[in-house]
Image (cartoon, rainbow, N blue to C red; front, side, top):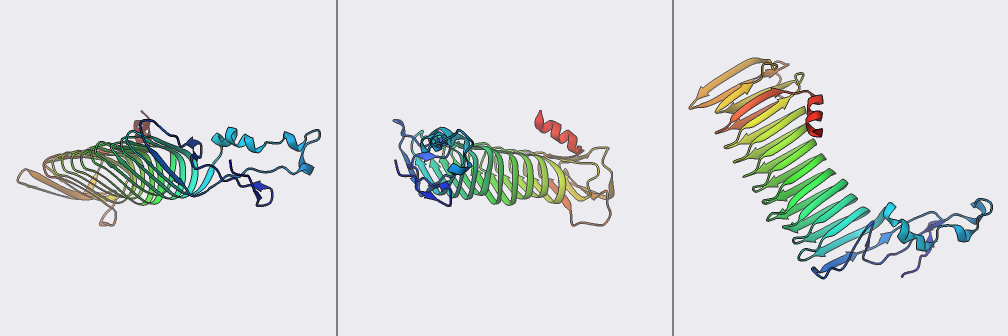
Length: 323
């Protein structure tokens, strides 16, 4: 066990063994090989000066260095670089860690990350699951091939890129200046989305519980179901599936809707509408709660499906998400 040199005026700075990963731990499995490269861990806790001790308490009664391993589960570790690679069914679990770079690569094993903050989060899996608990904070790049899936509670960063092949892609909260999420044949299921977001799947369906910002979503075979709470630009396209757009009654937008059939609920009143029917295809355009302005718009186009425009309040959307 390395020493615990004192530093930073009353703070201890231990350098830990490579296999201690925050509140998670690296381990050796007989079923899988695990390789861990840990540049540096910095863990701090206050050292109580003797003259500040309560009466009748000696220095020996203060938390000792051996207490580190008993209390680490409730602390946050500071790491410069974290690089983990497993083979076979080897799994990874990391929690309560801050680092410059966090890189994880698995084959069929599951990666569980909880409360991670990093400049760069890079995760690769070839058939395994990626599970995020709490918030993953940082520029994030996740790739899950074969039937690998991604299910993350909250993502927050400047740029976020996630892709799957056959597996589900799901996140409850997404905050990013720019986010790109794609899947070959898996479904994309998002909760509350903020920022400029691009979604694409060929064989799967797309669901967005609430969109605040610019949204571009496309699918070939699947359906699209989106609630637009706040608007800049929304562009929705499906080749063979139907599209459902839900908006608050007070939303101001220019709309262009086209499909085999276009339905607009009676609660929504469009102004200056234009409707064109040609070759079993209907195109409808109009203004909602405004006139002339076209800087904020919703476009929904499907070649072989139906487009539905419905009214839904913010409270209704919250109830649906929690149910």
